[in-house]
Amino acid sequence: MAVLSVLAACSSSAGPGAGGSSNNANGGETGSTSSGGAIGSGSVVDAASANQVGQVDSSAAFGSGTQAGGSGAPDAVEEAGALDVFTDGHAPAAAGDGAPPGSGYGGVAGLEDLAAVKKAPGCGMPAPQADTMWHPYNVSTPMTRVGPLMRTYYLKLPPNYDNTKAYRLIFQGTNCTGCPTCVMPFDTVAAPDGVIQVALERKDGVHGVCFDDQNTTSIEYPFIEAVDVDLRQKLCFDEHRVFMNGHSSGSWLSEMMGCVYGSAPQPGPVPPGGPLIIRATTPHSGGLAPTVPCNNFPTPGMWTHNHDDPMNPFTGTVAAINRALKVNGCKGSYGNSPTAPYAAPGTNGTCNIYTSCPKEFPVILCDPATGGHEGNKFYAGNWQFLTSF
Image (tube, rainbow, N blue to C red; front, side, top):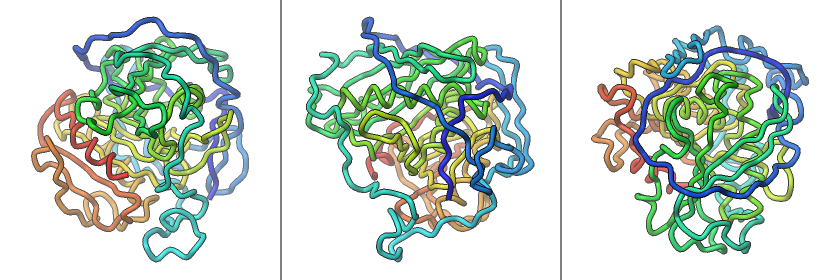
């Protein structure tokens, strides 16, 4: 199995994330400036041949599907179409209780023990902020396909933050036109455990008014790596319990990060700690683009997508589910893989878990018949799912 690193080179594919609106207020004060390390460098590795190449051949890596994109305008439609999104034609990795000793977590070679707590180097450091409001911080992403960029993320700490406790951490992405902190309020359902929430801000103008969620060499890969470096040095969290959530364009962003950083150790980033591992994702109303340089490692997730979504058709999530079932070591594909009801708060019986998947790498799909693009954001159910890790 080849592990993919993200290439900071030119490869353009149009098609912004779908937009929407949100009414949450953006609180907080101006934060301090910090700088990431050598982020996003390296080369993309063709998973089928293990050869270093200049860019990923989407047709080879993801089947024959195509991606229809918008023009970069607000609320543009992102349509995944009926994509055959698998990685490279390899058989899924064996996983489960019968794994031979030393074969890796869940029986997957190359995975460290993801069940063990892995404290970030920032444990013991003074809290960077004294309240539970959103605060902005800047990071440098010197190596992107469009040159150096300064990016902003927002941080929200749990009440009574304990700098010795390894919290769960959730990265979040909003829709194309939503404010950076117009994200799902996991803090309202996380008590008493607490959760560290990180909202990623879009770089409008590079990809319209959406995240750069359709490009093989997306500027979002070095961005999240730079944020991860910064957070690891000043916060106490469990590096094996880092998750990704998003809606609309933020959902496409979640799919990207789960596909590239899911389960598997990546080559970067530095300094100590890391590398960035996304343990599971909870995308809402998005899809998996065929331009994403996916790895072959498991990507547990809880997907939510309404069948009547007029902005991002449900077929985009079908593509993501098919890939997850394959790389997670499950049986079958969407429509013929066995499922059972998955009870979770607020989901109204619309969720099912795929029963053939290894317990370490679950796949859950919530697919209400109605709700459109903005409805049914099951963050309480998502939290239940994420606390299973």
